[in-house]
Image (tube, rainbow, N blue to C red; front, side):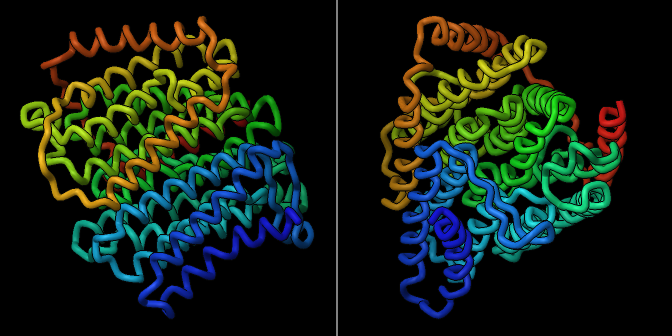
Length: 476
C-alpha cells in the first residue's frame, strides 16, 4: 500500500502538469485539488513515524526512502506550492505557468524521496528546467538573464556531482547514497560541492541572493520556501552515513549561518534581506540533521509568507517603509512570520530552534547561539515598520494565501508540547532581547558590503575554492 501511495504521490502532479493544457477552463481547480489531496501523504508519514526503503528495480533502478523527515519536507512543498497557487489565482497567468508549477512541485517531491544519486539527479534537473521556465515567465531581458544565470550555475555544479556519482558507483557498484561512506575523498568533495551549490549553502550559494531578490514575488516564495531545500535534503541523508561526513556537513552549516547572517544585518532592500536570511537559515536546517524536517517546515512557511507579502508593499526599501508605513493586516502577517524566524514562542520557529539546539554537538552550541542575534537584528527592522488602516487592492485570494501559511505557522507551534519548558523558553528569549537591544544601537548606522562576489564569473571561482576546501576536509 505504501508503495502505491508513494508512486501516486510522485506521478499524479506530473500527469496533471501535462494534462492541464487539455482543460483550459478548470486547470486551476484541478491543481488546487491535487495539491490539497497531496497534504494527506506527508501527514501520514509524520504521524506514522516509521522508515521504509523502496527499490523499484535493482541496483541500477530507483531507490526511495520514506520517513518522518521526508514527510516534513513533502508537507512544506505542498503547503508553499498551494499558497503560491492561491496567491496567483486572480493574476491572469496562463495555463503554462500552472503547468510548470505542478511539474516543479512533482520534481521537488522526487528529490525529497530519492535515495540514490541518479534518481536525485534526474529529479533535480527536471526541477531546474521548471524553475528556469517560471523565472523567465515574463520574458523580459532581466528575467531571462536571471534565469540563464541560475541555470548555468546549476548545470555546472551538477556536472561535478555526476562525476562524483560515477566514482561512488566505481567503488560500490551501486548509486545508493549509502555508498558515499565507502567512496574516495574526491567523490565526497565533488558530490558535496554539487549539493551545496544547488542548495545555496555557504559561498557555493552566493548565486541565491540576487536570484531570489530579483524574480517575481511568487517565484521568490517558491525558491526560498522549497526549491533550495531540494538541494540540501541529501546532505541530511548523507550526514547519517558516518561521523566524518556528519562533521563536515555540520561545519558547512555553521559557515553558512554566519555568511548569510552577517550580511542580513546591513540589508536595506526587504527582498534581499529575506534572500540573505535564506542563505543563513539553510545552515540551521542542516546543523542538526535529525530534526531538520521540522525546521525546514517552519522556515518554509514563514519565508514564503514574507516573500508573498512583499508583493503588496508600497516599496522594497526599508527606509521608505519606515516612513510611509504598511497595511495593518499585512503588518500582522509579516510580524507573525518574522517572530517565528526569530524563534519566539508559541510559533513554529521556536519549536524548530529548540529541537535543533537540543541536537547540536558541543562545538556548535555557542557559535549558533550567538548567530541567532543576526536573525533578531535583521527582522527587528521589519517589526518596527509602522502600520496603518488603509484600503488597498489586495484580493481575497491573497489573504487566503497569507492566512494558510500564517495559521499553519501558529498551529505548528503547539504540536510538540515538550518544547515548552521554562528553561527552554528563557533560553530563547535571552538572545532575542539581546538582539533587539543591539538592533536599536545600530539604528541609523550603515555599512555597504561588497556584492562583487555574486557576479557570475566570481561564482565559478567560488566553486573552485569550495571544491578544494571540501577535498581537504574529506581527505583529512
